Image (cartoon, rainbow, N blue to C red):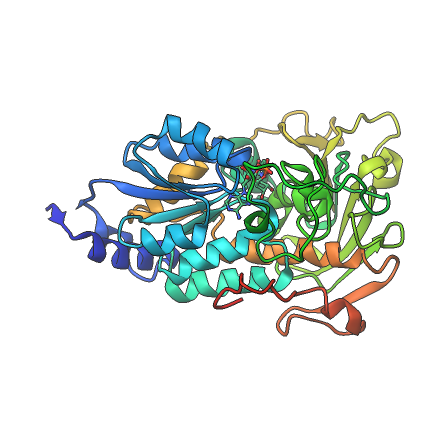
Length: 440
Ligand SMILES: NC(=O)c1ccc[n+]([C@@H]2O[C@H](COP(=O)([O-])OP(=O)(O)OC[C@H]3O[C@@H](n4cnc5c(N)ncnc54)[C@H](O)[C@@H]3O)[C@@H](O)[C@H]2O)c1
């Protein structure tokens, strides 16, 4: 039997089902939906790629686009002439409320939560880039609101849906290397800045709305090439350094495979804070409570910049082993699994696993999965219920890099560092006047 439904009914019912299997999925089979109308916040850089991937779904109609850079907006509008263009996402969401069905957020990290929460406050499902947020508190609120409103959400860790990583999850969960006691993960990228205050302050270019680019973050004078585009990820007010940026991809598979929850503690080894840029190289050690796939507690260790990759001998491999520039290593009771970023897993000792048959795993389309979930078909694999806690864990390490060599003991339930009061001040910040958001 085929049901035809109004758009309002469709959204209420599908968002309920997509969030978490409260109702059996078959109740919605056969819904006849014409178009899923999307609105996009940030359409340059990764936002352009997100837009193309979302628009490649046959049910999608790109209804609205928003960017604070008028040059970027104009270029994208040429490709999507029917989309209404905005420079303020608040105006886009309020004026298009009845004309959009879902919102995609691809801005710099500090604007993720403000834009996504504004969209969810309006009842819209959200696809949001990684890391989910800039602040620990924001990640908690993103998860809460998505669950409370039962909205279909997806964090932009697209490799989560890739066959290689889905296979790695299955391998670990099948117990191929036994219970895991340590995960080492690293990226040799350097999204940090160890220098002093920036010179070369200039008027922002005409095409850039600097006030809206800053959004909720503290007021800063414009300096070319330091913030926009892309380099904001090195700066503490806007980005989350290499750990937040690459760590969310590289820790994604261990976090999912081991079904981790919140860490018990985090400690960073890095230079003293300069309160401008993230440290250019970090080692971060987390302790996690045990799960069915791990030993009683588990060490999660991160290395970035010139600290990456670790020395093979220090992580239990022969010194001749070639480690990739980015990746992770699971250390189990019965072997190790190296997972390059990006590539197939390698099991050690190689002789022991020479005849190992890898599971066949299908690949998903991470973007289409979200659209399908919004339309009542299945669920997303990296909803905010998953991406929120993963982001909280990573951001605790980012907070720890402001207190080098101090172990931060974490009470996740109460969102509190129990042994270092000053660290709690960095879990949440006041938004700039004029950019407040209900729920943040
Ligand atoms: N999943 C991935 O593989 C992947 C890869 C790269 C980047 N990312 C993520 O994508 C996001 C964007 O990164 P990027 O490298 O493309 O940055 P970028 O600076 O190159 O692009 C950001 C875009 O957002 C626009 N923008 C900034 N503030 C805005 C606002 N308030 N409203 C509307 N538009 C705004 C900018 O003008 C620009 O067009 C980040 O969260 C990053 O972590 C993800």
